[in-house]
Amino acid sequence: MTDASIATRPVQHASPLRSALPFVFAILIALLFHLVVGPMLGAYPSRVLLDIGVAVILAVSLNIVNGYTGQFSIGHAAFMTIGGYVAGAITYYTSLHLWGDIAVDNTLSGGHGWLLVVACLAGGVASSLAGWVVGLPSLRLRGDYLAIVTLGFGEIVRVLLQQTSQQFYDPAEMHAATWRDWLAIPVGGALGFSDLPPLTNLFWMYLAVGLTILFAYRLKQSSYGRALLSIREDEIAAEAMGINVTRLKVRAFIFAAFFAGLGGGLSAHYSIIRPIDAGFAQSFDIVIMVVLGGLGSISGAVVAAILLTVVKMALTEYGIYRMILYALLLIILMIFRPRGLFGVREIWDFLPASKRKFPVPVTASAQEQALS
Image 1: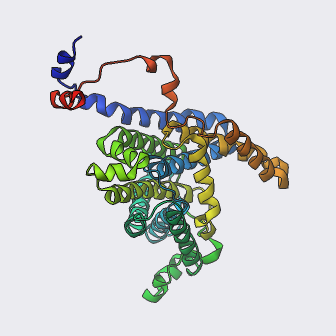
Image 2 (image 1 turned 90 degrees about the vertical axis):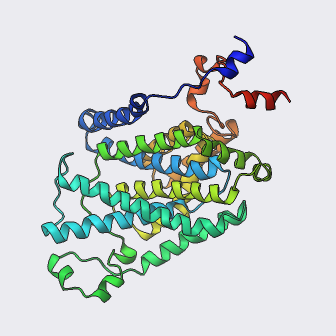
């Protein structure tokens, strides 16, 4: 095949049916977890699977900022916590207002499940707005300065949530509250926001996981993704080529914050959420997952999130020595894999079929520029 035939060959576009297949596959995987895997494993392993799902969402979403654009954000847990509180407040007080209690119908067709979807989307939007507010001024900074700003943002969120008032446990108490009581934001204060409807199940969790991974993959393959990766490689060169560096970094921050808020909303509906969740300790755990998997690698972030979550659960029986063993394992992994498990590549890049060379369709003008 000649160069001329490659240059003049029309680019093949995926059909709408083929484009929809990944979404259908994500739904089928979520149904498999909910209807087969969960009942087969039991209650505690299902809880571990929920924790793994949240970890994957957080790691893959942070990878958009730390991996794609090469920034160093250590305030990702704050966006998760914001999403959790917003989603929890919507489901909790809506349930008290409409049904008088938080008893839920946890089936897939139940109205409470769709309330969870709306609440988690609202939590994601609230987190993305917070990401825009923080990202617009701070992403003009680089390196350590950005890390300090995002760390400070997480501490601000933690302190503000500690100043909220106690939640209403009774519908009569809620209806008797004045507007001043609502201004104090009744979400539990320093003790945390508890007794939320247990709406999160394996279907909603792994549907969100699938959509997060699919979004991150398609973003990476798009022109936006290539621009983000160019910022990571050389920000000055990218700006010289006409890329609006600040705008793209802010968009990456917004995307990452949205999915962090989505994960936080799902996490809030099977466990208690507390202001301390917005602190730096949780954010460092997420950063470790991204770095261990390989900056820029989606599959690396997924594998690292699964590995670290399972290791933490397995080490709980060692009591006070758990964190020592956990730290030693991380040190050993980083010594032997300093660029992470997969580096910048994906897990399928290691398969033999991925090493075959295929001609890439290019336009005639692009070919002339390459030859000039």
